[in-house]
Image (cartoon, rainbow, N blue to C red; front, side, top):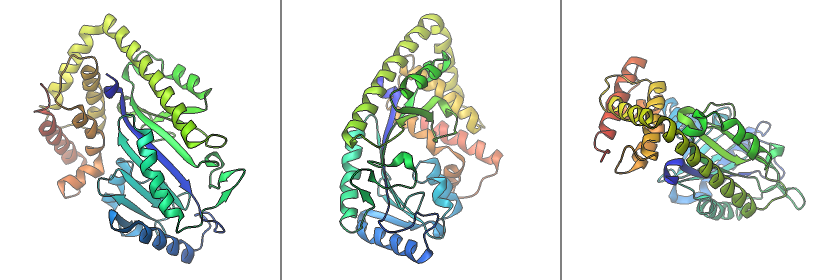
Length: 329
C-alpha cells in the first residue's frame, strides 16, 4: 500500500554566485554569461534551453511536469533550463536564485535524489564561485532557503485523510516539526486529485542528511495515518468505495469526453480502489503518470496541435481510455 501513497521524491538546491546581484536585479550581460557558463559546465548529458526560445506549449507542459517554475518565465530574456535525458533532473538558471537544481524520482527516494543532485552541484561548484557564508551557509534570494539551500519534498496521495477531514490535523502536527504540507503544485495550490507535497520549511541550522531524515520519518508517519484512515473507511463505507472505484474505472476507460477536473476526481477514486485492493492493476506507475500527461499543455504536445477545450476533453478521454484499458488485471 505504501507505493500507492508515496508518489515521488524531490530534492531541490538553491545556489547563487558570489558578488552578483540576485536575479531580479542582475544586469543582462552578467545573466547571459552565467547562463552560458552553467550550460557549458553540464556537457552532453543535458539538453540546454534558453527560456525565450521555448515554445509557449512546451513551457506550460514543463510547468505541469514540475520541470520548471512560473518564476523562470518572469525572467525569460535571461533565463534557461537544462534537462537530463529522462527529465529526472532539471537545472533552472536565473529563476528566483541564480541556479536551482532539482532531482525527482519515483517513490521514497530522497537520499538517492540528493546523491544525484549533489554530484552535479559539486561539478558546477568547481567552475562557479557560489555565495557562501561560514555561519549562514549558502546565500539565497529567499531568507527561508539560507543554510543548506535544500528543500526535500515528497509527493503523497492522501484521499482517506482528506475524506475524513484529518488533513488539517496532519498539517498542524508536522508544522510543529518545521515541515509543511501543500497542494501538488506548491504554495497556494489546492490538493488536486488528493495529491499533497510534504517538505521542510527552512534549511538553516540542519545538515542535508538531517533534513532528509526528518522529512522521511515524517512521511512514513503520515503513511501510517493514511493507512489507518483507509481501514476505518473500508469498515464504514467499504461497499461504497468498491462501487465508486469500479465506476471510476468504467468511466475512465469508456468516456467520450473528460475534463481535467473530472479526470482528477475519477483517477483519485480509482487510485484509492487500487490502494485498498478492490482493483488490481499491472503497474500503478501507469496511473500515476497520467496526472501530468493529461494536463492541457501536455495534451497539446501529444496531439501535435493546439486543441480547443472541447477537443482537448475528447482527446484526454481517448488517451486515458487507451492507457488504462489494459492495466486492470
